[in-house]
Picture 1 (spheres, rainbow, N blue to C red):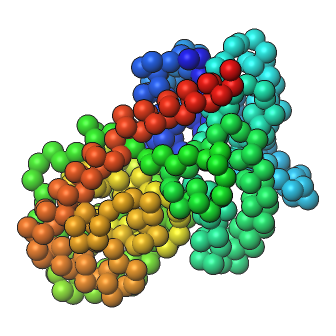
Picture 2: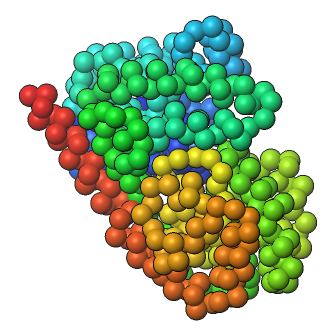
Length: 391
């Protein structure tokens, strides 16, 4: 097939969720299909990575997105009904490139990654798929109560705009993809298919025996506010009580763009804030347990699948676990309040054999249900069904 893949963020290096998923989509699809990628980029240094993506893409079209222009777009469109995230990525130059591509090339499928890019593809006549990942209205419903002041007002307004817009967009595409059956049920459309997220289990794996040095790791993009809120909650409500019971315990916060609030909590004795690292798998392999005390978010968290794939026992919340079909006490530990979180961490830090067993079970589960190969087979079947019904 000839596939046109449309994404808002340059998908390399795969550091964030909205880079990791399209990166692996491109990598695996390229084995059997011809891919043209059209994407925004925000910094000139992004283009240094074109070579990595050209291994998977027959053609790559890039359009620079200025942060100032995006903010102006949001301000100008504040009285429109479009969601802010759609306004942020609306650019005439990108639309022009899209129109030129569709006129000059023949594509079997147009794959739009995330709701924010739908203004460019929603009215095209070609067979098309919308890769939503999570249902944004559910995600925002969980985030609104947790934010404060200006952010709370902005998210409430965005939620109001998203609900109608997201429902409309689902109807405009031949098929939409979500990672969770729960999200699919909530949307209530027969045009949606749920495909769980995948993980590269050849990269995220255990390289040596599970550590017994009492290291707790929190991993993820620290520029994402739910991650920042989660780790700050853990430090304030749990960590020092764990430290009292397990004196050797230390917390390592690993991920890109940590904010000032998180950085200030690092003391380089008990709490370490690394920022960007070259290999997240290496960092996960150094820890004894992982945590993901997510208070918001929905669907699936890649950080949890990465830790599980590394055979690392993880403690998370019901919200964090989302659509991952893991069993409490067997594959993961689930704790929805500070007391349970503290007890679970202490238990796994002090019982090495249990920690090892839970970690191994977690990896087995990921290999069975969340490999990218399994994921791609399901995606290709969706492509085929769309093309069949279109003929």
